Structures are given as C-alpha cells and as structure tokens.
Amino acid sequence: MGATASGAAQDADEEARRRLNAYTYLSAPERLEHVAIMRVFCGTLMADLAVPDIMAKLRQADASAAGLDADTLTVRLEQLVQWGNLLRSSHAVNATSISEYQRSRSRYQLSKLGERIQRDADGVLAEADAAREVSNELLALVERGLRELADLVTAPGGIEPQDGLERISTLFVQFTEFADSIRDFYAYLGQVLSRYDLDSAEYQGFKELLLDYVEAITEDVAFRAPRISAALDTLWPYIPALLDRLDAHSQGLTALSAQGESRLEVRVQRSRGREFADWEGLRGWFNDTDGQSSQVDQLRDATLRALQSLLANAKRMLRSATGEMSRRKDLLRLARWFDEAAPQDAHDIAVAAFGLYGARHLGIPPATDEVVPAYTSWWAGPVVEVPVALRERGSRAQRGRASAVEDHSAQKQRLREAARQRAAARAAAADELRSASGRFAEVRLTSAALGLLLELLATALGNAQLSRNVSTGGERTAGFGLDSASSEDAELHIRLTVRRTAGTQTMLYSADGDLLLDDLELDIGRTSAAVDGEAEASVS
Image (cartoon, rainbow, N blue to C red; front, side):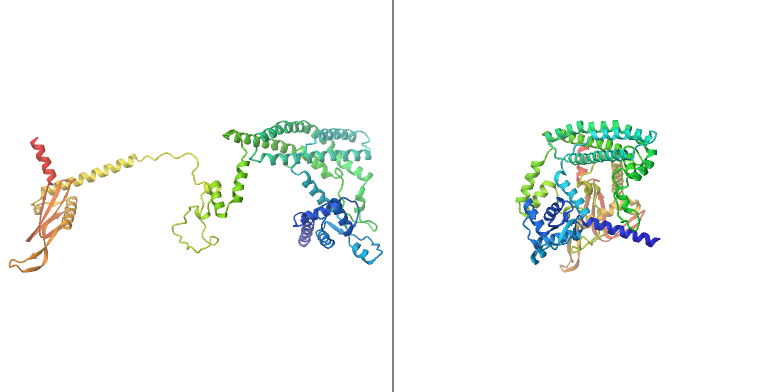
C-alpha cells in the first residue's frame, strides 16, 4: 500500500513538472520570438503548419520573429515541442520534389496545454494593469436564474432535461464571469492603494472610484446574497437527482471515458454546473461552509481594507507640508544623479539620501571576551547581536517615553554625612596630636591620631632636605643628615616638625601598636596662619 501511494505521488509530481515546463517559453531569452510563433498557431484551428508556412505568417504579422531564417525557426519550434507547447504532426506530406519534401517534412500543430497558456499570456499582456469593470448586472441574472430553476425543479414532474441543461449552463457562465470580474477589480484596487506616491489628482480619482463604484458593488452583493442563499437552500436537496437526470439525457464527452473494448479512455473536463463540486463552489461563494468564510464576507473585508488604505493615504497627504504626497520628481532627480555619478560619488549620494553606511560602520562592538583577528571572515566569525531598533527600523534612537531622571538626593546626603564624619574624625585626631605633643610617652594615641601622625611624618620626610655629614675635625664622613623636615595640613591647622637628635628615642603608644623612632624628635603645633588668625581674634 505504501509503495503504491509513493508511486502515485511520484506520477503526480512528474505530471505537474511536465505541465509547468509548458510555461518555460515565457521566461526564456527568446521569449518574444516564442510568443510570436505561438500566436501564429493560436490564430488557426486544427491546422498543422510547416516551417515555410510559419515564416510567411510571421512576415505578414510583422512579428518579432519575422527575421528568423528557416534553421533558427526550426530550432525554436523543436524547443516548443520539447516544452510541450507544440506537437509534431503526423500529416502525410505530398511533395513533387525532394527540395519540397525537405522543406515540408516537419509539420507542427498546437497542443491543448500550449493553446491555454498562450491565451492566458495574451490576456495578461493585453490589459493586465487595466481596471476591469465588475459585471454587476450578472448577479441579478444569477439570482433570477436560481429562483426560476428552483421553481421548476420543485414543481410536479420536475424540469425538462434539455431546459435544465440550458439554464444551468447559462447560470454558471454568468456566475463565473461575475466572480472573475470581482477578483480582477479588487486585485487592481489593491495594487493602486498600495502606492505611496499618489498626488492630489490621482487620489481624488481613486477616492471617487472607491467611494462610489465599490460602494455600489458591495451594496448590490449584500442585497442579493441572502436571496441567492435562500434559492440555493431550496434547490440543494434536488441537485444530486437533477445532475443524474441531466447525465442520463446527455453525457457528452463522458461517454468516451467509459471502459470497453471499443471505447477510448479520455480524461474529460465537464462543463460548469455538471458536477456537484461546481454547486458546492457556488454555494461557498455566498454561504459559510466547513468553517470557512464566504466570498461575500471576504469581499466586505476587502472593501474595509481598501477604505483603511484610502484613509492612510489621506493622512499622509494632510501631514505633507505642501499638500502633495508624490515624491516622483524627487526620486527621478535622485535616480539621474545616481546614473551620472562616479562609483565613489554614488556611494556618497546614497549615504546622504538614505543614511546607508557600510556594515563596518554599524558601531556594534563584539563581546569583550571575544578577540577576533582582522583576517577572520564575516561569514565564519562570531555573531554580533544587533539591537531591535537598528535591525527593524534602521535607527539607533530609542523610542517611547523618556524615563524619569533618577533621584540621587538620598545618596548625596549619605555621601555628605560620611564626608562630614571623616572631617570631624580628622579634626579630632589633629586636636589629639596637638595636645599630646611633647609627652608622647605618657599618652596612648587612637588609631585615627596615629594614622594622621604617620601621614604627616611621611610627608615631612619626603620634603626633607638632606646634607652630607662632616666630622668635627673637618673630615668628611659617610651618610646624610636632616637639615630640616616639616609638613602641615592647612585644613586641620596642624604642623609637624621633625628634628634629628643623636641618641634620642621617641616612643609612640597607640591602640594599633607601639612605634619607636630612633634619633628623631617630633614637635606638633598649629600652622602659622592659624596662629595669626587667633591673634587677630583676641586683639579685636
């Protein structure tokens, strides 16, 4: 079972590939010549043509392939045969000479698939961008035809088969033409409303088209859709029996598809309305079926989207300072600059016009722990995360409301209080040192006082001036002595003077430990500026 299903799927894929190959000539480099040749064949019915006949018809039509010689034309024809658009004819050749036989031995005729594709291609080339009028009057004929058919089918004795065939064929031709015109018109409308370069005149014309023409279409469809649905509901139970009765009366080409010794096996495409699936499609156009919305609902939604697009265009025009939306002239001028510019100037113009810089200027640094050599290819290098704003909108600017400025007043207050406490502690340490000056052996310094003393001592020794030691007899001895060493802190009004005295030991006791200074005497007092300030205060 699995092998059978797989084989059927492969056959279906092969058949689809064969049919799609028939479209190849429309995109081949010689497509204009191929189209001209196919038009020659489509202009005849049941005709097989030889190369001389085709060349004559191409010259008469003054087509793109009129200048082809016989050999090149034969190559084009054989290519169309290979794609499936043409068939080699089995027509017998009656020739009076060998040269005539050579010219006429290869004859070609049109395939059904090739004729269908060329007919559709001519339709696209003729008026693909034109606005197609909606055959709105056909909807009224469809409604009337369904009501009359329902009355005849539900009457005693039913409808005559031939009358039923005529009515159903007419009904489906009208409905198909109406549905095709609806699709074409709304496709054109979507193409127009998606443009962003409409000027005032174009906008005014399309506004009238949408508000007047489309409104008339949707109102007519909304008016007749319930009536058509009611007629279909009445007719629906009788459709299977009606189709069987019509087939019994006239089978058409379906008789050829019957299996038999003297029958041909032919795939037949039935006329519209002769199969139950056609009626399901007709009903699905006006009613919701199997959870899918009807074409009437889709038509209403498409109209709303068209109105929204029209309003969007109107908003853009109102926001425009000049009252015009079209940038066509500006874009044409910019295109002319690009066309006339040198390559480097074109890059500069692109940067100035669109802000498009090279990728190396994005300014997105890699991770700090990734060291990528300069020779590493971007293709093989590590991925750098691009911000969403830059990736989707091409902008580095942050969107949305700006966040409120963070209040740091409490932190500032804590820092001021900590600084005040440190200043008070240093001032207390300075007072402690001044009071302990001359009696360091009798007091125990606090940690803050000892720290301040060591700070002043290190500064004093760093600022000290050294002198070479000389003996009493005039002989120079090794080593250096301190001429003077002092330091001060103007903010704390404290001054430390260090004197070198041989044989003297100064012991400093503190909570952090004891410090012994050999041959050094310490004197701590106030700075001269502080003493002068106190004297002025006492005099006043």
